[in-house]
Image (cartoon, rainbow, N blue to C red; front, side, top):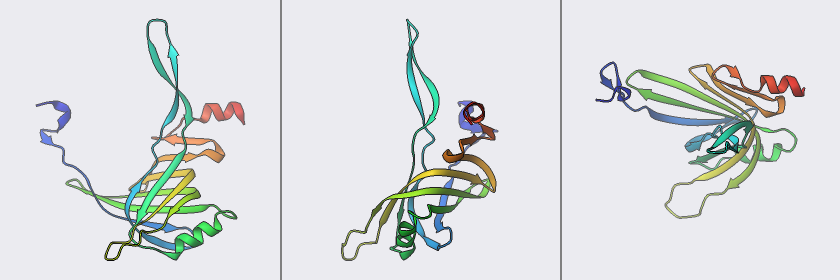
Length: 175
């Protein structure tokens, strides 16, 4: 058996997400999320030509952070948040729980940014309500059991991943 498939002789078992809830700072509970797509941390690359080979060089420039989430209810908190975003950016907190044979783990994602898309529910009699939003985030913080894993704050030129601020050197030369 391949060693990377086992953990001390035991096959690793999948983790399961139990539930997700979304809150908007200063307004309250937005709803239960049926599906949430946390933004990918993706950097721009540059293709360099080495004569006999080509490779992609990571530039350190972060691609836009877009949060996409679907709700199983229509809630006025979303409208209040959208209405306030031109005076004060939207602040979303998403909390979810993961279960596995090793135990239960809490996760929190914090986002600040602008809601750029709000898809109203389709009117289908007898069908479940589904509202979808997209938020262009300038701030993202991911925590697992209260321990920060990722902190991206593009306004303050901070990008901490796994405890290391990868923009520290660049920031010291620019600011």
